[in-house]
Image (cartoon, rainbow, N blue to C red):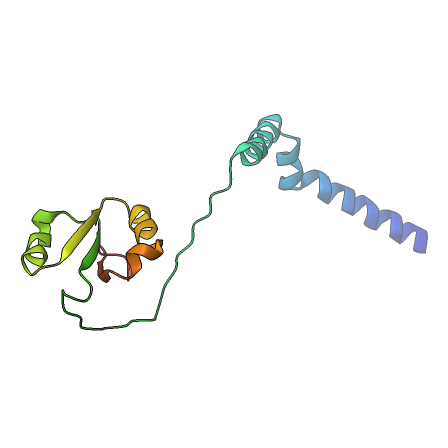
Length: 124
């Protein structure tokens, strides 16, 4: 009797496997080709690293133009208000790209003269 119950359960299992939607999709050649293409695309595509950095360290310091005179302005132009700073005696270094500004600030010889950095919106 146990063997008969086992055979009946196994037959029900095979019928369920045959009727299963996933099994039918796996046997579909179009789906298999699309899966292979997707996996090939993933293998051939270079990884993209997207990260965000937030800094919660803020420091305010007042300095006169005689001590430190350089203001680094990333993404700025003189017509955006930099000329006002120049009128006050500051030297404004304009950088179109943030990486150029980072390189400028990273040089030790420039650090002693920098009194401020102006960043565009989105650089909190």
